[in-house]
Image: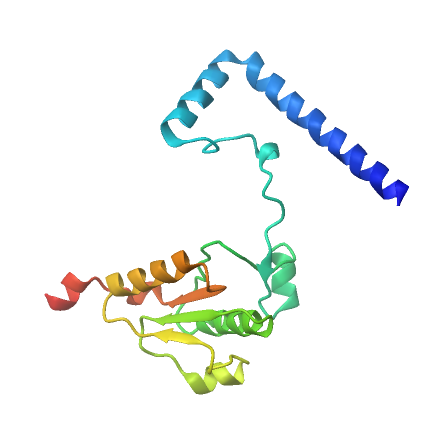
Amino acid sequence: MAKKARNTRTAGKATDKKAEAVAAFINENQNLKTTLQQIEKQFGEGSIMPLGADARGAIKGIPTGSLSLDIALGGQGIPRGRIIEIYGPESSGKTTLALHVVAQAQKKEGIAAFIDAEHAFDPTWAKKLGVELDTLLVSQPSSGEEAMQITEMLIKSNAVDIIVVDSVAALVPKQELEG
């Protein structure tokens, strides 16, 4: 127990030394210091900072269902709280990959939403991939704006673990649909 406490103190001292070194670096460069102050004044505290000063810690992820892909993505899968675009040609497996991630999120008791802008959601296929249809939230919006408003509301609720928008190409503006 004493060894663990000693390691924690040592780690804390190393972090303090890094913070002091960063502060000294900024203070030595008056141009940089002034610029950083102006940026923070205009955009708010924390809008710019040295990367070492970011105390958020590691970002948790949702597994993709493919160990190789999870490792390629840094070992955590799809990072939580981030916008991820799965890009590729038609019928290349983008929706299938997204549904695998949804299934993995649900396995960890996460809540998933699927915004079906293409109006092509196949519940039979989703179920075969392990998606729990009873708890999956599905929306088939009538326009791109509606899809984005629903997505924004889900994000702001902070109650959903993953939101899939399938697909960006199908997010047609209302004006274009009417006109």
